Image (tube, rainbow, N blue to C red):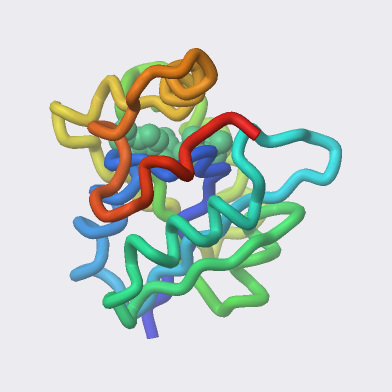
Amino acid sequence: MKTAIFPGSFDPFTIGHESIVRRALPMFDKIIIMIGFNANKKSFFPLEKRLKWINQVFQHENKIEVCVHEGLTVDFCKKAGASYILRGLRTSADFEYERAIAQVNKKMHPEIETIFLLTLPEHTPVNATIIRDIVLHGGDASMFLPAGLDRNDFKPE
Ligand code: ADP
């Protein structure tokens, strides 16, 4: 069984994230979207909402699971029996950041491969930080969010 973990903070889950998961689906038997939880870091959107949104986006997709994990992604991979970590790349800045993590992970856990998908050109500027800023200042970020979610839910807490 080929299982991949797609880890992230998903604060919020965007059309960029959704696209990476959908494009990776044919490559794996199962993709676990892992929301990284850090008890010492306050997120913009509460964990419950992020979980709910991702579950809603993939409600008809039986190859996808959504989980929350505090700690290293590689530890979660072992627990879940996953040999692949899926990540998306938008820019050279993403690449440099991701390269270091993937290479350290590979050194420490050679049995786990990190797989990168290049974002679609139209998703390159879609960035959770910018979306949070739009929401914080009362703007409408819906064009960057997956279809079918309740727009009224995307308000600052
Ligand atoms: P993290 O805090 O781990 O970077 P994110 O939620 O920001 O978590 O992103 C999770 C993954 O999705 C990362 O690999 C990131 O590069 C990728 N990603 C984020 N936005 C996009 C996008 N618009 N297109 C493709 N991949 C993206």
